[in-house]
Amino acid sequence: MSTTAPGLRAAVRAEWLRLWSVRSTPWALAVAAAWAIGLGLLDATSTVRGWNAMTAADRASFDAVGTSLDGLTIAQLAFAVLGVITATADHTTGTIDAILLAVPRRSHAYIAKVGTLGFVALLTGQGVALAAFLLGQAVLARQHLDVRLSDPSVVRAVTSAGLFLGTIALIGLGLGTLLRRSATALAAVVALVFLAYAVARTLEGWSYLPGKLVLSNAGDVIGQVHAHAARPRLPSLSQAYLDLAGYLIIALSLGAWRTRRDA
Amino acid sequence: MLSLESLTKRYGDTLAVDDLTLTVRPGRVTGLLGANGAGKSTTLRMVLGLTTPTHGRALIDGMPYARLHWPLRRVGALLDAGRVHPGRTAVAHLRWLAAAGGLPSHRAEAVLDQVGLADVAGQRVRSFSLGMRQRLGLAAALLGDPPLLVVDEPLNGLDPEGIRWVRDLLRGMAAQGRTVLLSSHLLTEIALTADHVVVLGAGRLLADDSLEKIRKGHASLEGAYLALTASTTRHRGLGPAGGAR
Image 1: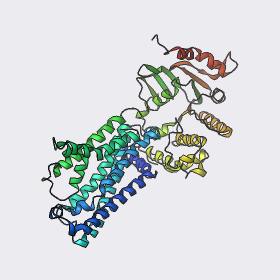
Image 2: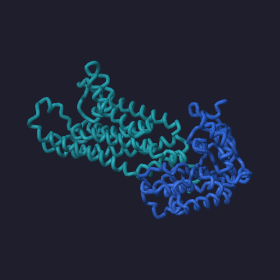
Image 3: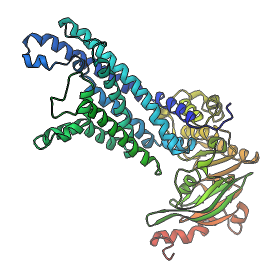
Image 4: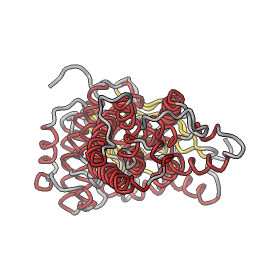
């Protein structure tokens, strides 16, 4: 038995056990992986089949990395849901009482949750992105359209796509902690991830700025190798990373603010 | 020892707990009585650091709960047995709790054995009856073998053997010199279990005395309780209690 009082390490150990003792965690991650890899394979296959019929312009804008990672658009929803329910389940089931009885320092309880889910989601995100990339390239190789990890910017794009998935899970966790109810938090996260894109498209007649700030556009940009400066409605690469960091910081800060208030 | 000093909680215009000062002493079972909405649960949640008091404080051996270094070894709590994730197994629930409290993980099996749930340790809580959830809640409270036990309505859903078992458990803990605070609606049960009784009405302290003294002059604890709470109960019926304050 240890003699020093339990601190952050004990809280992290508890979060690890909590995360893997409910079925929703492996399920959400498996669903994300299946979508990411499945859709990526389908997209790569349809490109290979239709390549000969494609216009020169379509061929020029083809992004071998982006194509193999197309499934991540759906996978990100599974990551977002994992983040949301990891936070809201504690409130809807009342487990938050037990957590705070064992870890009365609310900042510790929250940091442990963010750290543990962040670790798992970032690692799984990397695995999912890499698997989708490698399998997609294997299909594209049939038409000699594939790229390798050693090609310029490819490692950057693939790891960034994985980073994006992990970040989405943490944004979900922050919003879930803020809103506490699953339905509300899920609606907020879907609006942020999917609907904001449509709104930005509508506003393009007036300004490209909303499009540059939309989370899913940032995710698209960092998960490709093509130069995007030519496309005015998308953020530049560096701005895309800043967007991502901005969303993460805001969501986690809102969650942190709410944890200071009684459950 | 647990002491409340002017403990107060206000929600908007409602005083849920109104300037509560009392000491809960070791070596006996202290029963906490009061009608629905009298402030029992809010008081217990403030004792455990889950609800922040508007004024005053609750101290466990001189320290607020949030500052305890080993909270699970100092205080065992059962608040609402339903507030457990239904998708976790009983043993998984206790294992993460032990980890969070810095306790060895074999304590999970030990307390499951103690409360009679060893055979269903691997079952998800979803399949548990209310009585089994109460036992799991008590297992969680006993995890750190604490000298102070705070239990809110632990008898809900228990069968007669279960009720007898909880009564013996709480009395046994008190006999070992531990402090036991038992909140319940069940007056007959309090009369059988508690040595000392605290009565709340509309958030205020109505009585804080030994069971015998409170019962004196009445046929039963029920009679004494109804006489004590008559004023606050009528107030609640007519309008906001303590409106003259």
